[in-house]
Image (cartoon, rainbow, N blue to C red):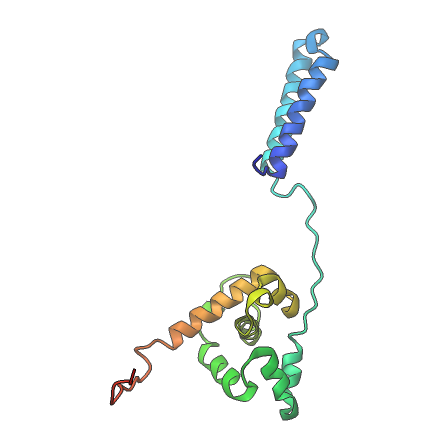
Length: 184
């Protein structure tokens, strides 16, 4: 049996209610105006079910990750190995340079009233995700450790990879040809 949406389940249940209601309380003893009012109410309810986006209340999911510790680890050279363990790059060398290269890319700016997350945070989430494999790199696991939603992890990764690929285009890099062929 195919999976049905909550909207479809509710509509099927409502139609069943209408059919059973007709059997239990027939409309034959109602006037034409009363039947018209009942049909109009049924159609309005049907339309309301079809046009309502969320049938269940939307609740906020509390999030608290540990990615904020990366900034604490970056402050002290004694803790740089912990930053490296978390994001798989050194804070002052690779992370800072990469951040400087991509932070002004237009993908990190929008015309919305809701600002994007800071570029350093988006880059940290991306590097964290790229540093793991298997279940550890799943959207759910990265989102849990970063303290954000799974959709944000995907968006941050897309933004950063787009900016990195744009910034570090092969034509922009000075590629030195090999002086001798690589032995096989």
